[in-house]
Length: 80
Length: 230
Image 1: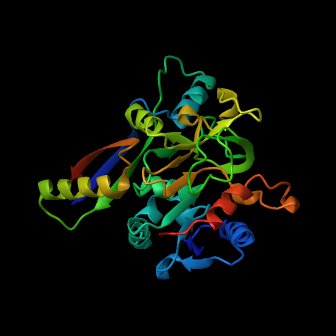
Image 2 (image 1 turned 180 degrees about the vertical axis):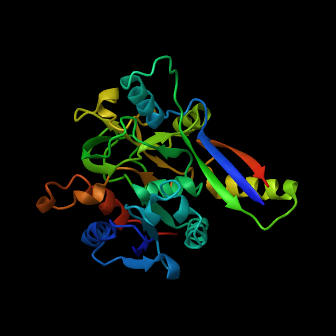
């Protein structure tokens, strides 16, 4: 079973990398781009076969290590 | 005063820290590889700067979860002092030993330059050789030094007088221009409520001898040399 953990800076936490990406897009002539936020995706291969248990385990991993919940939020998606 | 420096893979400022501690205490600090970090008998543990575990995932995240942190927590729990500088500060926030987090510098640039720090309180084991309000120069070298905490945490830090150092002008004015990395409320260094844990981004250990270009950082180490764990 695969889990995909998406980690983003929380709303209100300054994301200078996202800002720089937005400015670069603007510089390339892409019109109509508002705020840009960047984050990361971590893919986990889990031995667990129960989707609910796999999700709970991945969330535990995210809270303990993968995300810093002081500044980041995370979302876990289970994929077959 | 017995000091030990904990070294994680990727830490690279341990020798500067050892020179500063040795000069003030008169004895060489123990250099402790993280895998066999025996902290018994130490008054002070220092986590120096560098790029522990390659800054993978987040600066300090891997070191904060490593087995050595259990020994460091136990050292603090039994009344020992703990100093984290630069990556060491990042590790302490990641480990939850100090609140908040260090974000990417607001201007995105790695900052390798001097800054000025205003001493916000001079009644701690770390800062008592400075005067409150005194300004000293310190080199900084970091890409992620932008201190962040939510407003409630910042209010608590200020309310409990736990901000040790702020970025300031050479004259001591706390201004946005003096705040090169964009840190919340110009915060450069903070203390734990016990006043036995301090973390800061700049490097006082880099200015402890006239040959280094100044001795602005020496009072920090002179203060630490005098401390004793009751």
